[in-house]
Length: 172
Image (cartoon, rainbow, N blue to C red; front, side, top):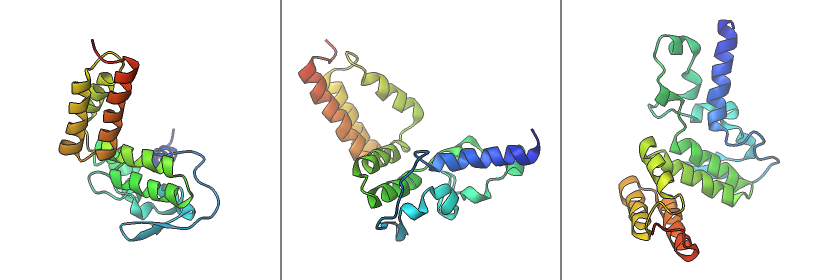
């Protein structure tokens, strides 16, 4: 594979990180705003149409990540992760086309960018039926809320605790 092809593949991977669906919203709709920037379905996919808005967790702009920097070690794995801001922009676009449930899920995903990967896996395992007591799940909800500023995800875990109790899925 030549250097130009490799650079194109890397750009496509990075662009796909800012796209939440290969189909994306279609049609024209009213815009929604994120940090004073009006966004609509015309801005989808953001990575292609508004790359200047996309920044990595380390603050690099999407359009500044190039193969040469990758080969020199100037691009770290954190530079290839999606940010809460990018997910919020995607949620704004989803809102602008009437896809509120999808926007809600994107916002929850944005919250999870603040939670360490290892903790996410622990929470995932705790949410498996029979693995946690109601108190343990409620404590996770409180942790998500207080420690990570993740109220949407905290509410999800608390709701799971209630549902697990009704369905007898809690640890015995």
